[in-house]
Length: 319
Image (tube, rainbow, N blue to C red; front, side):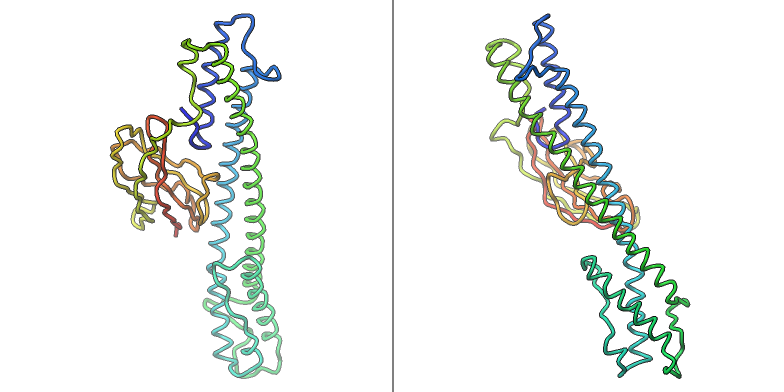
């Protein structure tokens, strides 16, 4: 199969390994080597390294996704407490300096510092009000819904800061893992190009040339994309995607792929499911394994020729 995505590298490279082994079986004691004495054994090792790098990138991306979801889960309740605190101050201390310096509650989409800074201001204000002996006729220390006290707010804020640090660290690790994976791909392509050139030079007109593995799909046969709709099924508690049928006569299958977060980057996509051509929907939790996780999905039309085309993006957040 030709190279169409990161996931297609291992099977494509295996086609080259198989071809190379057949050539070497014919050559006997003088096996085919490429520039620098590069052998099929080295190419096989490079393939294994790429498989390991792809799997490592998937693992670190899943960890990134889990920690980002954990962060989102922690943001909602402390944000609710910030809103409650604002209402308490506005209710019990109107027309006071405390009400005048009351920070706005952060937005859920705010960057780390813009989310944490108002919460820190609230903590400082909460502590100051609790300690203000001049305040009379109001219920102190401040207790929010359910008897929620400043000590619990401190605990929740510490947990949130830790979650931000963990999410940031794992995001950096995932990005590094993807870069390390990508660094292995270009040299592999160069070796496959060299192999094709060597076969065309030494075995022109033979079965070896005729059966050379392809590196890219044939031109002019890119399929039309399908249009996808979907969302989170609150009853089944899973993602539901559906699409119209492709009318391409060379249709092999559909592939559901995704990118963690809120944007789709082909370099970061991963395959979630392979769907047969007679099935026009997919359901599952791939891409959003835990509450708070976010993923952008595409459905690819994949042809027997190796050509493919991705659909529109469908962004889904798991409640």
